[in-house]
Image 1 (cartoon, rainbow, N blue to C red):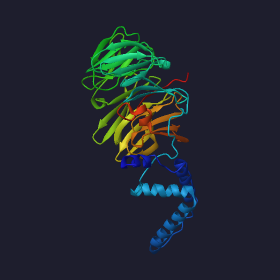
Image 2 (tube, rainbow, N blue to C red; image 1 turned 180 degrees about the vertical axis):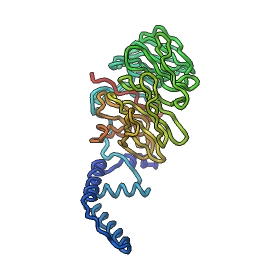
Image 3 (spheres, rainbow, N blue to C red; image 1 turned 90 degrees about the horizontal axis):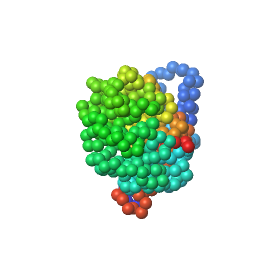
Image 4 (cartoon, rainbow, N blue to C red; image 1 turned 90 degrees about the vertical axis):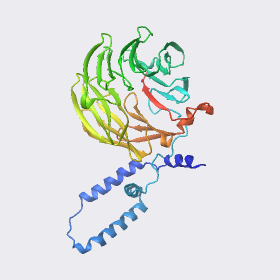
Length: 395
């Protein structure tokens, strides 16, 4: 085993039920503290008391799983922690923990993963998008935009230069995509393709509903929201909200999220449906991705903080309401929600794992290892970690 494989194995190792142990330990400490009887001690007794406390903590650690979890937290605080991961991960993706199908892009092409874990390669495409209800898949490959069935049957091909970031509208009748430095819109049957505007390299986002309202970042870095059928600009955001690296609508169409990279940090910016800026909050670290939950205004956000990455869930209406759901060494890549919002799917390239996290309370974590190899059967393509394109549909 070489150093790289050893590191990957270590990253994928964690004592069982670490999250639960940490919570039980915290409850014990918090209860003990709240029930303490204050007792004044002379200053000369502080050092002996500290030494005794450390000895008791070590004894607790030796005797109980919660105690061992506390010691792991202490090690993490002083920088001696070596690995963080999930123990007893599955060696292969045998099934999804919830209904639906996951759309994945990898170096070997675009794949559909069924609920029973079976996988189908749709072809050597670079990116993909689900149509509503998962009836079709839109995929991009260099100079082509294509429409396929989830079974891999090709419906049509449209040739355009530098195609990327396809996004199927919620109505099912439009696809927005980038072509070189422009954003374009085509009907779901390949008709009516046309240029909408100059655009930056940021994936466009359709507003939920049947009105064909599209948000995109224009060539000047402004966020534009346009009714594409009439080419009417509904509102524009510039200034402090300019140049986001990602935009995303909530599923009720009442919130538009912008993620803007700053020096050593990033900002989340939230607009209402009419373009009024509601919230702006800066976070430390480097943004890696964000996704609205299927219901409500919760947003899953992943960021890099030094040698570690974090998965947060924040409330788009009150950005200061946030929770760290998971933290690990190395880099996270992307995050997606299950169709009913009960599971989060987190990509962890540094551990070569997917993590299925049950709810934001982390009541359960299911890990699947060796993701790079699973989407590179036979080693026929350059190995790389797969990208989560979407977890679609309960029917």
